[in-house]
Image (cartoon, rainbow, N blue to C red; front, side, top):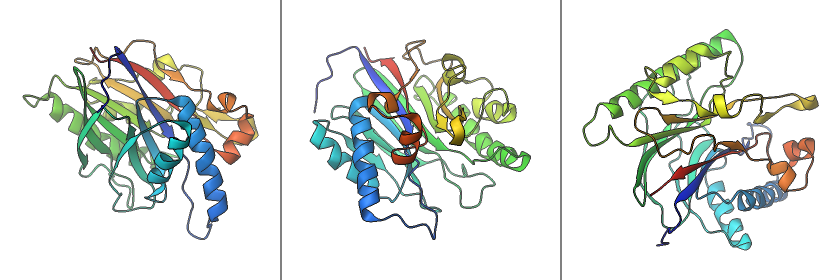
Length: 275
């Protein structure tokens, strides 16, 4: 097990945009090419802990782990297959980070039939103990989709509130990250339910104002991905450290080429104190 002798770690979140709908098969060569590019991007990102959204198929996470070795980057991975879909949430973590107790949050698919449940793990590294929750909420900008996200956010918010009220857990940091499919300033009710009575600080809404993570066609973009930390007991997050990682630039690619060949999302990365 690696001995982390530095004082901070970097945690990241990235939507791989790997979902292929039924009737739209992706050839082995195309999938392998995308995996090569995504492994290159993850090697450049080089975070100690990464939440991955839209892992598809289930064994794709092991494909990335193997391809990352070519770049000299070693990861362990933790993932449970979603029961109701073809796209999954998983975690990459470098040796030396203890990741245990993987579980889904019951009912967190909300009113979305076939939706993804939030996926949680316990993380320990040096003196840092945290519960990391990865989410992939319902997409869509209509009223119905917002209400569906409300139903998901309410369950996850209640789960966070329960942690804060549980002896032995209530002082543990909570990191919530993933594809929220929520836009700050628009999806107010979603943030309200997910915040759990002001329990969470949505640092991505503050640190990434006027930035984007989701690349759309014709130059359009928005901030759908999210990163939040528990407000009362999480002093581990280094304020102001959350950044949008310009993976397309580090890979010497234009934004449109990156959207087509790698992912239509850019990752976030943030720093946390571990001593």
